[in-house]
Length: 181
Image (tube, rainbow, N blue to C red; front, side, top):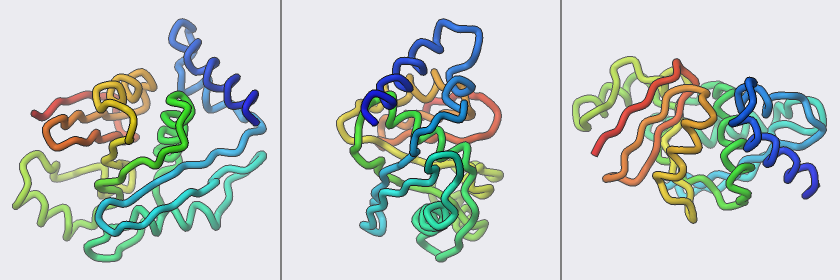
């Protein structure tokens, strides 16, 4: 397993100099399990889930991830975008870490998003959180600026950098970048 992980990690890093994007290189079907490790700072819950095993998605594990990334304020659950899970996995793989992502926000219901828009600066009206295509995270042991560089390197969607509040936003929407102090 370690040899496969190292091969994938080096392949992704090599992808920076190839005509193929790093994500495309990562997305090839390789006989490797994909596991993500998460900790929700609001609920105190921890989840380590293998959402891809051998050559297929594991529905029961994806269901656990969907529940974990629910809107904790309302309890609403949505099907998270698999591409978002793949982004998290790629980041863990490249960083060569088993430390859990600290999740600040996953899916947001319209009610929660509206409430946050009234009380918090910078919450988008049509946030990708509403579509279950976004997550706000940080990763212990990784500087936020390095996490931002890595997410931008993957070129798989939006990357918002919030150093003052200590998190980074990634989504599977159009490629774009922003910085909030």
